[in-house]
Image 1 (cartoon, rainbow, N blue to C red):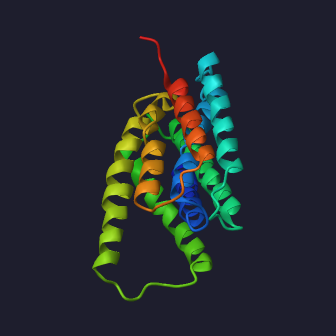
Image 2: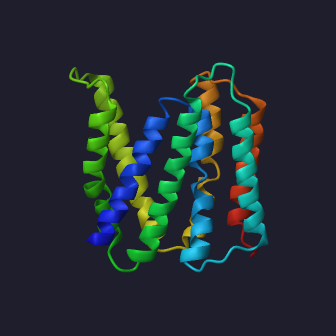
Amino acid sequence: MFHGFIAGILFGLEFVCLYLGMLYTDAARAAIFVYLSPFVIALGAHFFLKERLNTLKTIGLALAFIGVYLVFKDKPNTSGNLMLLGDILEIAAAIFWGATTLYIKKYLAQKVHPINTFLYQFVFSIPIIFACAYFIEDKWIFNVNVYVWASVAYQSVIVAFASYLVWFMLIHTYPVAKLSVFTFLAPVFGVLFGTIILKERLTTGLILGLVCVSIGIFCNNYTKK
């Protein structure tokens, strides 16, 4: 139960940083920063799970840091003074995401059923998310319409339930350093949809940072057959 509580706290902090950061930075930038989590996992797995880094994975980590630097350096002209804060919060979300995965693999995988791990995340993350929302949200929604219900349904059923249940099941079965290969396309789609749907400016630094992070993820998860 204690380890489930810690995993839930880490899970809750991840989402607090994720959504709070989105208030200050672009979605395309957030997509790149959040998906630094595979590198957090790879580095943490090296020290805590004895899943050793090799030369190729080390190169991937270096490319990830270069990618972050390029995105940081080249901000769009429309950026506000708080974009840096948003970027930092998204990186913090990536760190909490990686820490959650590592903690589950070390203390819960092979010891409890995946559905228990899944429930630990949501039950113990509720208090910290509500507490942060109480102090952070300046306006509460009382007029619940179809748009609000659709948003809640999407976040609850698709994002929170289906995707994370599958993710936790995978964590219980496979090495965590290799699982993140499935996140390779996520920052690509994040940047793509951010520029097309949200009309965010596609800067040179954003493109180069995306390339570096994507190649880094590939290097980090490449396995010779």
